[in-house]
Length: 100
Image 1 (tube, helix red, strand yellow):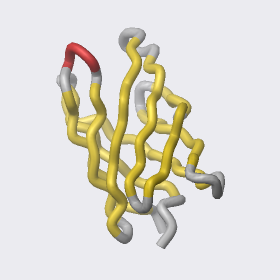
Image 2 (cartoon, rainbow, N blue to C red; image 1 turned 90 degrees about the vertical axis):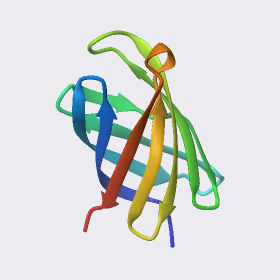
Image 3 (tube, rainbow, N blue to C red; image 1 turned 135 degrees about the vertical axis):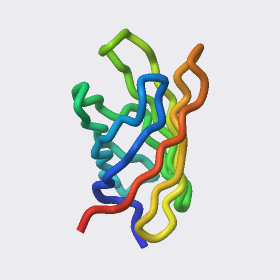
Image 4 (tube, rainbow, N blue to C red; image 1 turned 60 degrees about the horizontal axis):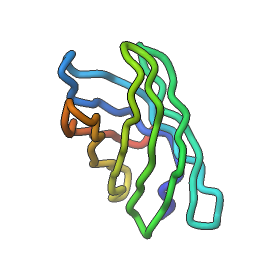
């Protein structure tokens, strides 16, 4: 099954649970593009890589403060399980379910 799709996600942050839609567009060459859009805005995926059903990527957050985020996740069927590394704020769990 492809990892591509849109996932309804919840990330456990120091500011509480943040809901977002994480979109994965498989480029067909082991890379992906997409975005993570939530109440605090949308961040574009950068350096997205696909290895089987494992994803890694980075995002540049601007709100509430500028910070580079590093994400990793595993897709198992319609379930996404992963984490976002927010530098000094540590690792935050990110879980989601594929839409549709």
